Amino acid sequence: MPHKPPTKEELERRKIVGINEETITDVASSDYPLHYPGEEHSWDIDAFRRGFSIQFHHNDPFEASFSLIGIDASIANAFRRTMIADIPTLAIETVFINNNTSVIQDEVLSHRLGLIPFKGGHEGLHKFLKWWRKPTDETLVNSSYYDYNTVSLRLEIQCEHNDKAAPGETDPTKLYKHAHVYARDIEFCPVGRQDRYFSGADTIAPVNPDILIAKLRPGQEISLSMHMHKGVGSDHAKFSPVATASYRLMPVINIERPILGADAEKFARCFPRGVIGLKKVTAKEAAQEGSGYEGHEGEVKAVVVDPMRDTVSRECLRHEEFKGKVKLGRRRDHFIYLVESTGQWESDAIFLEAVAHLKKRARDLEKQVVNMVR
Amino acid sequence: MPKARTKKDEAIEPGSDIVMDEVPTSHQPETRDGMSVDDDDVDEEGGDLEMDENEEEEEEEEDVQRVRILPGSTPTAASFEFLNEGHTLGNALRYIIMKNPDVEFCAYAIPHPSEAKMNVRIQTFEGTTATQALEKGLQDLQELCDVVTDKFVEARDKFKAAA
Amino acid sequence: MSREEYQIPTGSASASVGGGAGAGAGGSSSYNAPAVRDYTGSGADGGTMYYMCGDCAVRVPLEKGAAIRCQKCGARVLYKERTKRMVQFEAR
Image 1: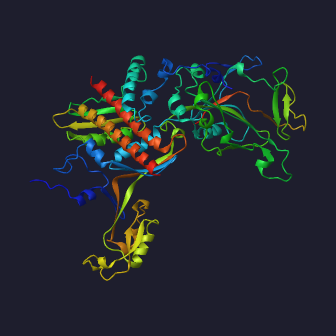
Image 2: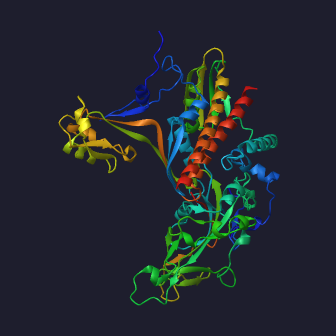
Image 3: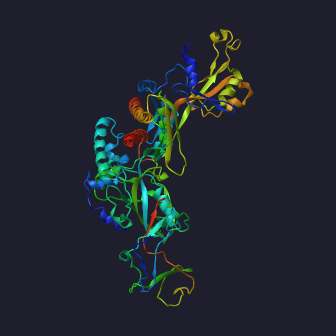
């Protein structure tokens, strides 16, 4: 028996994850070959290219929001995971403490220094700087630091009494000099060729100079030097280039039966502002038989204006008035990404790098598979 | 001040042996495609040459075999073990391989979260081997990444121009 | 896993390993080489230890075998100063 090709409504229905009062339905994707008899769902790069699109919502240097439409969750998740865990970043790795008489313990201070995000010249960071490997022979560690794999920083600060303070002053920042140690007090000490890549605006500096590292009182001193190395987020979170990269699925709100009058206003309040709008019922709509608008000309009805602003709290499903009138869902193949960079990479560059990294991994494994068979 | 600081004055030529040995293949800048989208083809050829050299020089890092067939596999029904891979590649690869009409069954599993090992099982219909399906899957994944990169750059430039 | 045993400078026969906590996340190891030892502020013979008085916070030089008292205020509780040696930490 010949199979009927799916209708447009059927295709749309397949793309939606159902969100009900207490359950989520149709979660897994079903577009595999042989799942629907008679239909072709094999991998076709051209069909993918036709169906895939990207829309940008905003693209600030360190925060970008864009939608990937027409891709599967496993791939979208692979991009997200790669952004968080596999993009190399420069961060403080070793701290050499010569003197620390502050109340912050050495290890706590080192931990805090490691978490400070730094920025620098892009060419220097991504092309010039290479990875540092700890030599297996411990005695060679001190000769493994070169200008192309280590960046050296310094923090030297002493707290003293401020003679010029007004008598009766209680604010420690005015009573003492250098009572608060901020990230901007860290000095970059270029070595070798680093001057070429990291000078002027490109110098290695903390992204947020106002990060408070420690507090001191007169007589206390912090004198230490630090080495920065490249690392990845899977090793330690300080190496993650994003203050998280996340995605959500595009919400879908279907108003099946009309919601009118005071109900419509209540309906609009169940969603964040801007999701639901109110429109007047026109004479033409009221004239349609069986539409539910008969006799309600001039009243307001609820319309979906911008479902992307919805946070899917399912509030409307909790009220009796709307039972059977609204269906909530999410589009299974529409991913709204939010990439928030910590400042070393630009957000769009992070995504591109993640895609390139995944491709590289697949390529390297392909070579290995070929090797394995031989 | 640690002794280390004085050593850094030695200038090392970029491209010399020491530089290459220090770096894992996955992060050598010469083979990084993402940074120069236009020169993709050029970079790939150059990168392959570099990696071949390294594979001959260095036995420890680059030559580690990260994929193997698990025992008990037949040509059409095989399990593969990947080292240092997790859900990121596993789920993506599983999806792409399932899109292959010659594949009867495909699944991935991570035997224990403490070990970075990932198993992929592929069962194919007569006509193709599991290894071929795996290779095709990896190739399809690379094509997919190319399309995503192209569309992303296009969309971003369009957005910037419109802003 | 130290490859240089630390010797007490006054020439006592015992050898002790200097160093902080070994294993664990906050691993530290003293960079142990006598050549880097900082002798500044230690007194002419290089063997006087300075201690901090518990009451008046003054730096009190004390020889080996001397009476344990603060010169200024006579308090008998003295604290040892932080080591002059460089300590290394992983920023993790």
